[in-house]
Image (tube, each protein chain N blue to C red):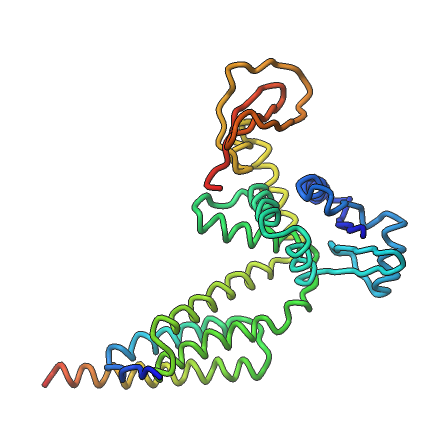
Length: 245
Length: 63
């Protein structure tokens, strides 16, 4: 079975991100442009009323399936597994340049995946989610009042509802706003030093003593010893470990 | 089954405030009419319970 991650090739940030996701998916996903004729034909077979939005296309012989919005996120999670999904989400959040605390990082990762996946996304997929979340919070609050629920459980329900609200509100940004935010984050990322970039990508690095120079700007990753890896960026070798991994 | 103890006035007050806040929070969203009605009901019930619990607490304190 072939799985294609379809993205807007007209958006430089999306293209770079999609290629990086392809690389990190270790062969599970192939990034392709939504404008590619073959992909469009496949997409039309799976979903004649398809729209210009990121999609996950599964081709299994004659069978073609397309996933977008929330369904794409869940499908990608299933295909990639939690570990790779987490790494990809972290990459997206690094590009977005969000907070560094563990909680902020988790929220950013989740929101980052969402921001990317719902880029120009299908708002209709989320219809009903707001109502369920509202009901969860109000129901938990009411149950807390009447002692029908343990006090702690009631607060947890309210907290979950607030989290859901924040997530939902973040999704409301228009595609233009999301695009502007991503562009700004990308520019912020580009303005960082090499060490800063590596740190934003989740690595804690220091320059290796035996850096051998070289040119190019191409990164490569090796495994010098357990827990640390060698990353060459713009010809400079760094010894890196993961931050809070 | 374990019975939860009956809540005291202050014990009811804060959950009621939370219920009001969460209801008002969700009312800022574009919800389906039935969900908006639930949120309004939550806000009204929350305010009533908060006022009632607060009143009972203050009356108990003044005795």
